[in-house]
Length: 331
Image 1: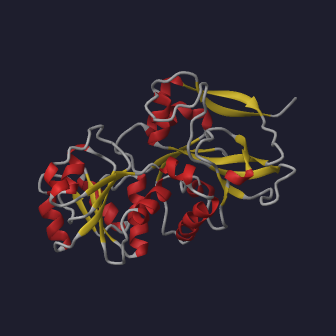
Image 2 (image 1 turned 90 degrees about the horizontal axis):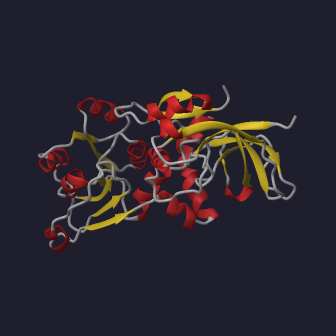
Image 3 (image 1 turned 60 degrees about the vertical axis):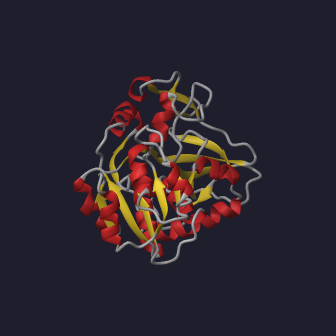
């Protein structure tokens, strides 16, 4: 009997816990330029849930397997592959669909993970840490001691931004919605952690001694983005990478005319599509080093086997979690 694998699929858009199901598929066979990867771990990201709901900008043809992140071990190598060996831990590409036990992937699309990083953490390096790294480097030239401000600071990307900024010597103002998160994020390296509110501008000025803030990272939109923009120095840049409030940004004309504030966006999928292999390698290298040293680490609230996919996505849809929900395939 031929070998098979289990994969999560959705055949229609809807509530993830209702439309997701587990099916058996044939075990993949690699083309000459491909390898077969046995998936070890794959997180559930908000974008994955949005894709299942039909709310994500990219809609793969149905039926589709969700999952924009994952890591696993190479178990078979195509005849023309020279740069990968069986046993290598690799990070999977974002357009694959990682919620499956195994997959065949073009070798050139994989990122090899160095020793000292376990698979669950490797599986979560491709989206949030890369998003944070690129936003901290691509829009404003920051030096050690400079300030950056962000909302949704307890999100996956927000936590990565805190850890990366701390390692690079940048100082961060981190905005959250719940007071119980303040000490938690300070322990992660956040220099200032504040609960969002109408007095945000005054609180930021007091905590930073009115230091200029030239970069803001916005994952919320709406009133939160406006309150954050009011804390910025002239010529500063707000980079929007999420819209958790589902509300548009409403920026007063004076912020553009008199302060010359700049508002732009970042989408990590688009960055990957345009990045060369060398640019990807140059981004991952410092992140790997930080991860090896325990300086960059995503929080995990619970892991699930793929067989419990419905419970896993229901859990991931809940607010006020303390970390990621992750599929583990080695149980």
